Length: 213
Image (tube, rainbow, N blue to C red; front, side, top):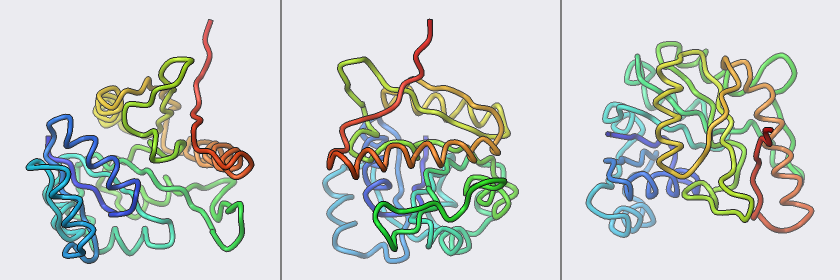
């Protein structure tokens, strides 16, 4: 499968490398794809990895992953070109965080969410919220004593969620579907629980699991 990653920070590079390692073709999209760190990422990741502009990555993708800091998300989608994402699955891994203080705070909450805003910005895409509730160090093949953690997802299109569920399972996750994209209103505060524990413990070695009986 061709996967375009919109964003070249830690989350984008980790997910991109993990998916390339599973045999997918991955293009990492950036405002400046010629950066030395991206050339090094592509070389280290191997022949399944390449870099390009946001528009090139969006056009290349069968499934796209949005992995930007919130402040740059709207700009990245504009540069990608909403039409390049029409009828495609767009995994929204963002959190609407303000880093002017530590711990950061949510700048979108209540009766709206980043996931819903992304869906409004690219109305032709099938947006699925995923990968926003864990640090990048455990996004690929997470291993914990209590077994695999759960990835909570939300989106309006069942087919898109099935595709994302498949990728999550390839990456070593169990999946819990929380319903429509409006459930991002609860997933983004859930990410704050992960962040607050990180701040208090100075460790990112935690993830979440829905216990069932």
